[in-house]
Image (tube, rainbow, N blue to C red; front, side, top):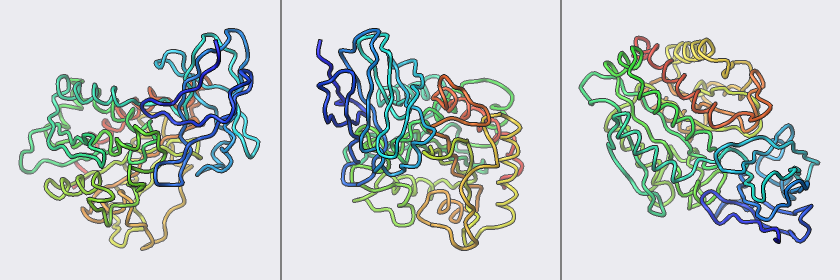
Length: 377
């Protein structure tokens, strides 16, 4: 059986340069539609010889959007699309290579454990049927895919409004795994969740960029727009996804905002905040510290040493969701970053950072939110 490489499926991304030698397959990552960004890959290899070593080389990795991120990175692979494991990988400055001793005739490789559109649909159904959320509003992406805003709570006057959104950058699939964990946490009928829901409503957008995720993009939607650079001036033509969420926030209000992302380069879980905003206050600074301290106490999968440089006062990029929301609603607003590599403070050599760990973090963040209800306003 001849070796065959394919990526014509949900979140697939690869270009074949030469697959004539099954022992060394030459590939390239396809850029986002209408954008030069590229880093995400996801493909299937059929016709492997069991017991034989097959080497795959992504020959344009050195030209990718975050080419320094390949150092210390290991690709993920799965024989069944359920159980994903890391494959030792090597970056020589130009090409990312990894070798697999085949245990089955077919295997999938990806930049990170993918979160499929089918699983997204199932998550929405579970959120409604098992966790008691309601679809508060639905919009359409540029290509007509549903963008759901879910709410857990009754919308009663005086309740806090806690917002969680994910996957503005479509290649950051750990973000929707995070949302899955958060929704599963809402299924638990325990004291923390009961106290949370007595005083707060949750507003969830599990996937902000369904078009980009489906097409295997790294950063942008179908128009080539980076959604996390559109919050100050979102338009229906370029970023209807952001415009929809902004309109819903204006209608309901925001008391806490968490935007889930993945970071290519930093092998740690961390948060970025809005300290560079013109209206940044000591109250917001205290809330950020409380959130971070509580999450550190909650899980070893968070830390406060590594992260992005702090923005200088008044120098924030107001096109980012965290900054725009924090300024607009004078609330605790955070970008939560998970690694494509591993969380080096609590490493897992087999899986690195994974979908399961992202989901566990979602549960922990919700616990922290419940602990902070007396502080938010």
